[in-house]
Length: 251
Picture 1 (tube, rainbow, N blue to C red):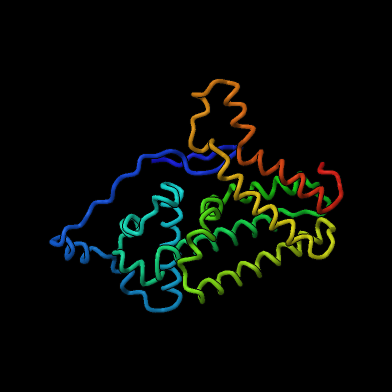
Picture 2 (tube, one colour):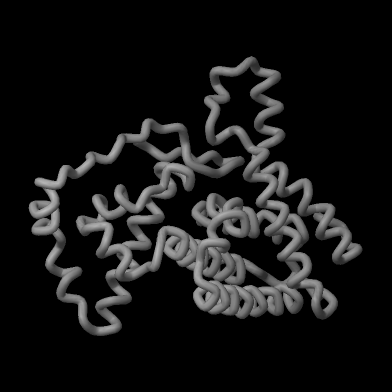
C-alpha cells in the first residue's frame, strides 16, 4: 500500500486496507511472549519518551497509509511489535494518542513556517510557504478535520488543557515573528494564521484529488479538479485574507 501526494494537493492515496488478524484465546499467551523486550525495560523518563516517540512515528505512518477513519490501535500495536495494552501505558486512549500526534505535527509545521519567514517577502511568497509547510506535514491536515468533532471530546480535560497551552504558546511565537517580518499591526499575526488554518480545514474536505485518478477523467473535468485542489483553494482564500489583513498587494 502506498501513499500518494500531489504537487497541488495533499493526502492519503486510495489503498486497500488489510484486516488485522484476530487473536484467538489460545494465541494470547504466544502474542504476549512476542512483546518487545526493549519496551518492557524502559525505566527512565528518557527511555519512556523514546518509546512514546516510536509509537507516534508508527502512528503517523499508519495514519498516512489508512486515514483517520480506519486508524486502529490493534494495527498500530502490530506495527510497533507490542500489545495493545502496552500502547495504553503511554497513551490513555486512541484519541489522546491522535491529539499528541496532532500536537507534534502542528509544532513541526509552524516551526518550519517560522524558518521560512523572510523580511520583505510578498504575500504570495508567505502563503506559498504556509501551504508548503502544511503539505510537508500531512498528519496535521488529516487530523485537523476531526480535532474538535471527535478527538478533543474523548480526551481528559487535564491532557487537553496542557496540549492547548503548548499549541497556543508555539503559535503565538510564530505569530509574533510573522508580525515583525510582514510589518503587521499587533495582534494581526495570530488572526491571520488562525484564519489560514481554518481555511485549510475546508480545503482538505473539498479536495477530491487525493482519492481520484485525474488521468482517468475527461480533460475538462480533470482541469476543474486541479482548480479545486487543496493548494489552489487555500491560495485563493489566502489572498483575500492577506489583502484584508494588510491592505497591501498580494504579489
